[in-house]
Image (tube, rainbow, N blue to C red):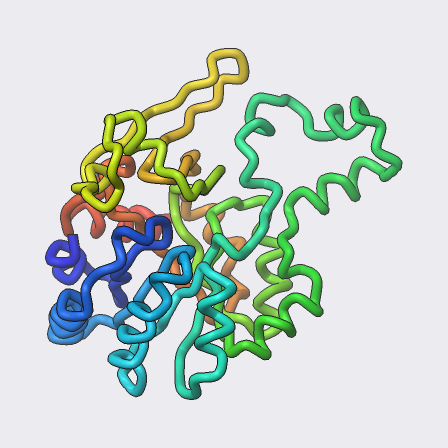
Length: 282
C-alpha cells in the first residue's frame, strides 16, 4: 500500500499499525519504508499500536532510528508514551485510541433522538448538556491536555464526527495540532483478535495477517447499524463531505488521514486522489 500512497497527491504517508502489535515491522522494513517515502518528498509518520511489554524494546530500536530524522510518531500506548517522553527531539502525536469520544458509539445511530434517550434513563441534567457531553472528548478537560503536553505530545489523532468538531476546535485552541481520520470510526478494540478466531487461526505468532485484505461486515437489523470487523477492531463508517470540512476552517494546523484498506476501497493512488478531489469540491 505504501507504493500506491507515495504516488498519490498526499503530503504525508503513515507507516505502521494503530491496531495490532503483530503488524509492528522489522527495523529493516522500517528503514526501507522511510527511504521510499522520503525519496518521494512525503512526510513520514510512524504509527504504533497498544503494546505488551515484550514489544517495547523493538519500538525503542525504531525510535532510535527515527530520532533526529524528519518524522512524526503516533503513540497509542501510555507505557510507550511514558518511555518516549524522556527522549528529546521527538515529534510525538497522541493516537486516537488514547482519546475517548462517547460519540463513537454506534448505537446512537439507531436512536432517533438522543434527547429522548437522556430522558428515558432519567439523567439529572438538561438535554442540551447531555448532548454537549456526548460530543466532547477526554481532551476537553484542560488538565488532561496539559498532562499529555508534559509528556511531549504536540498533536492528536481524532475521528471524523462532524458533531464533535466544536470540541475539536477547543483542543486546537489549547495548543494541539489535529489529525482527523476520515471514514473509519473505531467502536471497539480488543487484545484478542476476533478476525483470527473467525478464520480459525489458533497461533497468532503464525498469523499471516489476513486483515490486510479481508474484513467482516456486521449488521444489527433492529437498529439498522452497520459495522466492520477489521483485524482486532470494529469500525463504523462516516462519509466526509466538503460542507462538514468547512466547519474546520478556523483550525490553523489540520491534517486529514485517508484510510487505505479494502473497507473504504482505497487501494491505489487513483482512489486516494479521488477522495482528495471530492473533498476540495464545493
